[in-house]
Image (tube, rainbow, N blue to C red; front, side):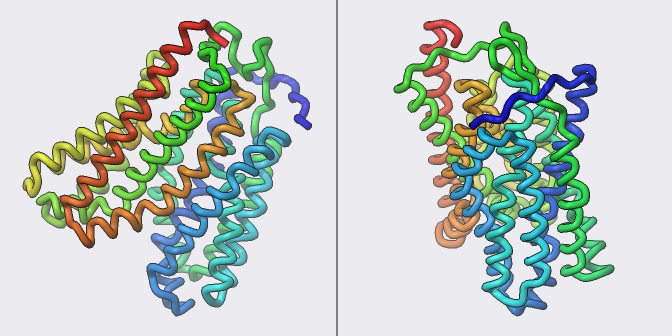
Length: 415
């Protein structure tokens, strides 16, 4: 049973949008910063206290991503039935419980049990639910807001690494996690329950967007299935590349000929380049679509690895150009992945489709660092480039298929 639409917000549109961005930015910064980004800072202290290998500590992240993948279809049904605000609130409670359990863990069993709960919380409180909250309120006009939100979300590690580092030094990792758990309940739970603007229903059923903005192609049942499979393929392949390369980027740049100091500097610039590319895509506004942006991003990433294949072991210029192309492509691709379902499906279908796509995408994200590390260890630079070229080529093919499908379906007129 669907939740009845809430009355329109009395705030002006600009203030409503600002409030939406502010609430969800805080939500995602704290959500990602205290969970996925956290072991990079607290991992060594956990290793000492729990007497567990460092790689096992990071296995908690794999547990988190796998649980998020497996639970995402169920979360999609909850989003449709309850609405994003209530699901985000549920996620806040689960995240708090998981972080508290992690702070009390004494060994592998309790450690991974805590990450299981954190994974359930992430299913409800992280990207898919946040993007659904935007689409519920803005419909097909959500691109700018999602892009803005992802610019802020991309800063989670830059903000929370120093915070967690200071907290660990001052009060220890267990107390730091307990404060993080408190933040999810005391700060994020009220924001999710009461801080989000109300959903707005328009005449065409697209929240927050006038009927004239609806440009969805007409899709029959077969084309809807094709669109979903292509979106899932493109998103999963891109995640497999992005997460795998990000975890191995410094070593990859060293193998490509960059000195250790330069490799560290260039790898650090990737995040800035990615955020800048997201901002450029955001400023392009309605002149671009998620499909066109996703194809351009995939081509940039493919070109980056093709450059490394053609000019291996270069000292400076090639690694620099590689980071520029890869950083820009991966930054824009992250926004495109979030919005691809909205290019083919209605606002009412967005949560369900995004949650289904999240299943293979999160599994790919969980496995990718191990896959790329194994390729680097056994086959060196050549193996990593070959794998990355294959994945980015297949991503380009999937994005091209989506573009052709959209163009063909658009001939039938808007839905």
